[in-house]
Image 1 (cartoon, rainbow, N blue to C red):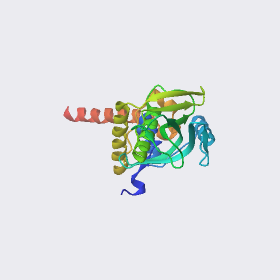
Image 2: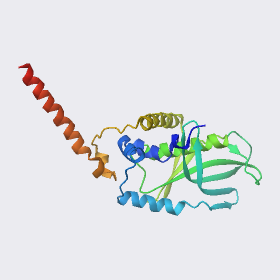
Image 3: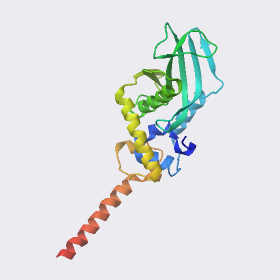
Image 4: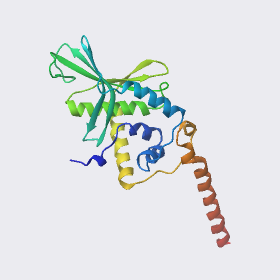
Length: 226
């Protein structure tokens, strides 16, 4: 068995998919800085994270704040919400719930602030949660949902083989960086403006500094050769 510190955060894959340096600053260097977006995100999750919430509505059971883990990914965390829906028959996509009749499908729902992203950072987190649940419950989970607070709508996500492979690849990279305590270099991009760690990271200064250093070295190399 791996030690607890060898498991990486499920939510961390969303940071890593957005920016590898941001993930390292938070999860390796333990740096964090609040901004309006992170505060909004905390408020969204505070509303949904209720460990006591377990409600049944007919053929639908809703459970919030479920601890999840994957030995394969070496990852652990909390699923915002999982819906169990009664199915007509037992298949590879259903489980048996203690004290309840019939078979039940399993579907994770991840809550996010704002609206759907231009990239897959939210999707890979949802997919990682589904992969944890599959491993824990010995079940297949073909779909999940992302709920966005700004649009107040659910986005149906098919958890394809491509997404699953991407999750595995990202976690391999994350473990490599984490085990070696490597923080990737800053690369300024347009999405940096959204980052709560912009002032700590200083990607523009890092990029300019690196270019200036190269020019300085090349200038002196050139002068020596002359």
